[in-house]
Structure formats: structure tokens, C-alpha cells
Picture (tube, rainbow, N blue to C red):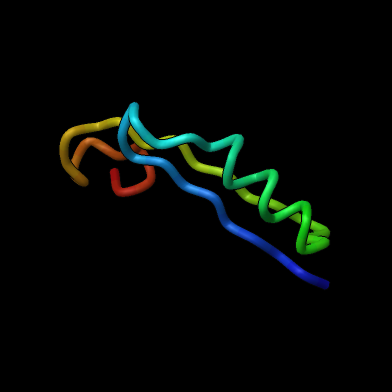
Length: 47
């Protein structure tokens, strides 16, 4: 099983573009994360 992880951290980055590339490589599962917080301590996952 091919698994991919797409992540953007700025408004200039494009999550959909990354997903399309992964689909071309036949990824069966794509995890995504859109992180626009200024620092890592604001991430919910780390609280």
C-alpha cells in the first residue's frame, strides 16, 4: 500500500497541487495537514 503525506504551512503553498502529484504516483491513502499557525506550540496535536 502506498501512503502519502501532504502538508502546507504557508498561504503560498498549494495542498491540492501536492495531492494531484501523489495521485499520479498511485497513492492509495493520502493524509493531509494544513498548518498556518506561527509556531509549533499553537498546534493542537502538541497540546
